[in-house]
Image (cartoon, rainbow, N blue to C red; front, side, top):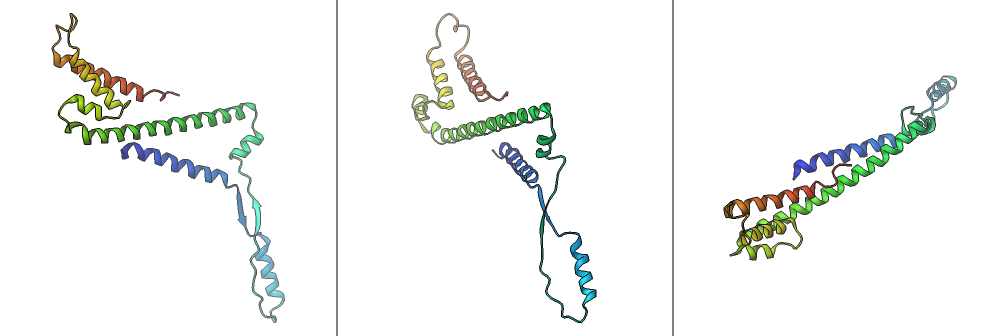
Length: 186
């Protein structure tokens, strides 16, 4: 669980840090003439008592030639189009990441519930009925039960029951895995 969640949290933290770094385009500084002016005033009036200095801060704008605002202001249509496409692809990637994380957490919760109560029942049919309707685990359990019940006919007479049930369950597991991988390609 933590092996999948840790890179996701790291990516979110890096994205937020980068957002704050790009968004802060102003800096506060003391004007360069302020120390020289206070030194000149101190040499002119040595007899007077020193007055407390008041901190005066001015707001200076720092122009970052590598920021997004400079790219948008000075870029041509190719640069602006590329920026728009990258923003759209980034939003799509985040959507896929969040939805797949939600699906993974949902499957993990179903797995915990299945582990707690599935093997406490006397028969597989009763155990399968306790699983949540529409869940992947119920689908796999019902596929195995159906394969066991329907092992008959000319095609299955050359395959023993264990192999038949194993193949059916394996097919259903692959179907679930395929469903979980839907939408990963953007």
